[in-house]
Length: 237
Image 1 (tube, rainbow, N blue to C red):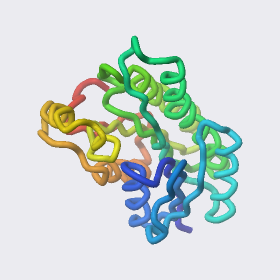
Image 2: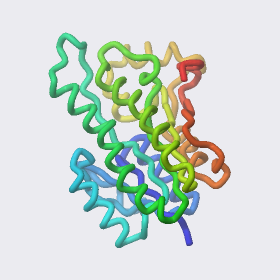
Image 3: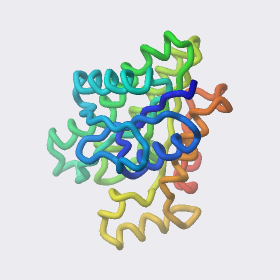
Image 4: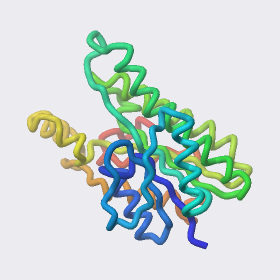
């Protein structure tokens, strides 16, 4: 039977590219979204979900399991930013980013791994960021949340390895998404200029790395961080 994959935050950007790549690889794919679902023609099973709520996560998984079956592959991609310098950063700015990016990823992984453990097979991939290792001015909250995903992934990798559940991290660098396009042009150019490969990444390039990590060919990889950053963070992981 074709395996079931779930991509959180799968209606745009890296999440949407990943969902389409997994669909094209033959998986049955569900996505969660908060505001707008992906286009119906994408052939993805879309479920509204607020990953800051355990009840919402449970309801989303119940709907996916009823439609497609147990989630065997989880890509925890959903995330937000509230960028500002620390002296201007409110408690809410910090807490909301941690609650969504880190605690939200924990919630979906905790729910998914229940069925993976019983099946004695599973794949979990957390989508982090190069700034989780390098840091970035104005992104203390975001960098902390993305760094936390590495510790979370490696802890889960050790907990679930005996049941053939692998847990890995993909760490993108600057990628051409709607979030990045919202930056001023001068800022975008400055960021691209420091990437050794001299360009932004494409969502499809991150999706390709994730597709590999969830494949049977990656069965002996767990607790790893795979940078997809054009060389920007080489050596930091």
